[in-house]
Image (cartoon, rainbow, N blue to C red; front, side, top):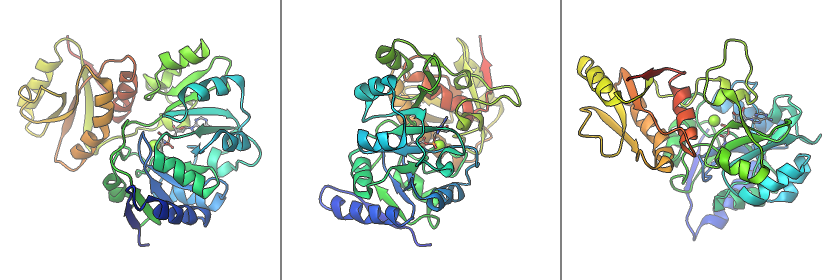
Length: 341
Ligand code: TXA
Ligand code: MG
């Protein structure tokens, strides 16, 4: 299949988005920018098209998709919207927050993988919302990467994974946030964050006065135990080399000794630390978790095409947006953390 690639700008976007919306309405797949990561979209009401998303990504069949909407009316068509839902939506939509509610009958099993709930998000990215509006249907979309690879934060990342497998890619420039949306369920007694993102647990607590963090966010679950978000059980977001997170007061010395002993080992470090590590990939500022979120997946994709034996990652702060960065690293490392004290 020939994949169309279109760079969006303020002059051409209307025509290009109308064309992409037509592809979606006709059952095709279109990758599009959002403020978090690029999405791989299909008409959320077309079961065959949704199945093709799983094929293009090589995605496991028990991992449900997020429905992207352009307004609250569209959300009300697919989900049973509760008070908690409206509190969250009024504070953080449009934006990097996905809310899980009970689904309505019109949402098919291909999207939810048979669950009775549906994940809904109204993205903030202008092109994303124009595309959904023009399509006139909710767009089912996971991140537009091959399953298991780091999520794409530029259209080129998408092209590397999806060229020849989907109808079109819309290039809206690099994504602002750089990690996927926060996923919160309001179906449980206590609203629970299943995946952390740029909307922090603290901010959800501000809206609802109550929030829990699913333990799969910061721990590897024992064999056989199912996380509430099926996606959180997979080793994920990983470059092809081994990743080890290093934390503790002696982290720098520990990584330096590892780099000395193995000339193919690298450090994924903070800005300003390049002088400390002979072989390094910088992913952002230690004091600014948003900059780490922004740089993380590009750094991992860079690592992916280099000949690296082990990538030792400096550990981000585990507060605010830092918990989202830590969660992605933790999954890339398959839970592998060293404490150097
Ligand atoms: O920022 C984002 O959320 C991006 C952009 C494209 O919007 N999308 C994204 O989708 O990250 P994906 O498919 O890569 O991740 C969706 C996560 C998965 O962990 C999945 O298991 C979970 O949301 N999920 C979806 N529907 C769910 C449901 N009904 N119940 C529990 N978890 C659900
Ligand atoms: Mg994903």
